[in-house]
Amino acid sequence: MEHTSAIQPLRIALVGDVNPDVIAHKAIPLAIDDAAAVLALTVEYEWLATRNIQSADALSGFDAVWVVPASPYQNADGAFIAIRHARENGLPFLGTCGGFQHAIIEYARNMLGWEDAAHAETDSEGRMVIAPLACSLVEKSDVIELRPNTLIAKAYGRESIEEGYHCNYGIAPEFAAGLEAGPLRVSGWDEEGEIRAVELTTHPFFVATLFQHERNALAGRPAPLVHAFLRAAAN
Image (cartoon, rainbow, N blue to C red):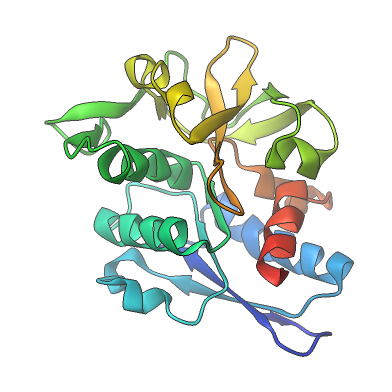
């Protein structure tokens, strides 16, 4: 799992429970390798199973963290530990699909003080900041409008994109209303105004999307956010 060319390799932690049948898990290595080749970077990536993350020590030595799709995770706490570690230590962070959902919960719990912030897919009690979508987005694609001058808009170089999904859960409307007041900024919406991307304005590079932009690599297309992610790790 290595792309050679530079002196010191970048080490990327891929946090999630790798499954060869998950489309996004097939795409992620291709997206990283493609971006590394274009940017002339040496990149090593390692899959970290959530059950093996019991403390932030598991993230030691990594330059960036990507919390990948395919939740529920075997150990949701492992995902939360990785997200918090990246957020508090300024490590470039990318979250897609399940990674997006868990980044929202981690922010609600540890930045807003909502200790009971919960995920409707796995939790029966608490404030459901992640709730069922009005319409399923399993194997669907949609247009996303990007907020100008954000990290994601700069990565794509435009303010309207179309990307694919594989999910049934997103940000609950009750929670969405309060997001604009804090540093976790909404940076992408679908055509109905539903939140599809966020980024943390107090962090060098902390971006999470409900859509799976990494899938572009399976069609031989670049994944602009992966390029921006590696660029941030290199800096």
